[in-house]
Length: 261
Image (cartoon, rainbow, N blue to C red; front, side, top):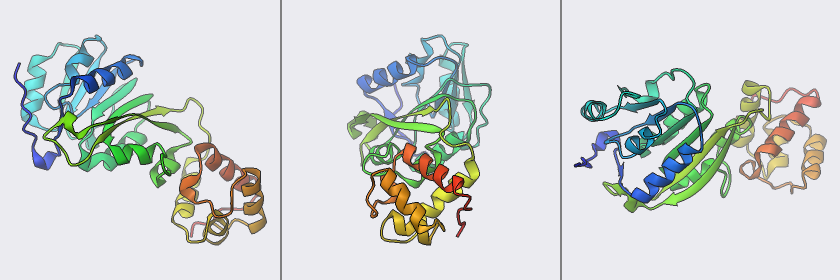
């Protein structure tokens, strides 16, 4: 069967062609249960092996020609939707979301996905540096810190740029996201405002940032850093998910209302 790897530039299409990577993603999905939602199936390199499980599979493809061609080729338990995934409304309760995410909409896709309800696991092929930052390798991003109490992020593997056609300029990474069964933090909006304030605040290290930008009393910031065995010049990107949760709990217990400045 022929494949059509001439990706449209305006759609950011770089198709996955490496059979080893495809099999690796399929194994990760096989370890989950429930319906499957695939983002950007393209010519179906992932869709076909995923469909062999017999699980309900919905594939969301923005390119109308590829969506029609794929729908004509796949069994009845696979639904192909010609939609922009950023405007797709999840139906039902997908057990896993999987996809080779177009590099130019990676951040937008992650924001859409993390705001969507019910799904439990995501297996996403994204740029290598994005995968690293989301999994806090070398320091967490603001997006990761904001969502950490509800989701766990990990990197499964690095994927060579030669696994794609056309070949992109950077390597990819397999990012696995799992929804936590019990969140680390109860109050989402105030916690996320606090994280944003701390991440964007100025100061030489976390103690100054907490005091100047977030309005946390200096003794409270000092005592929390000591309890976590962290130096005063620790940066927000260096905290773990659990440390963000304990910092938030400490500030809330103190009765101080974190600054929105």
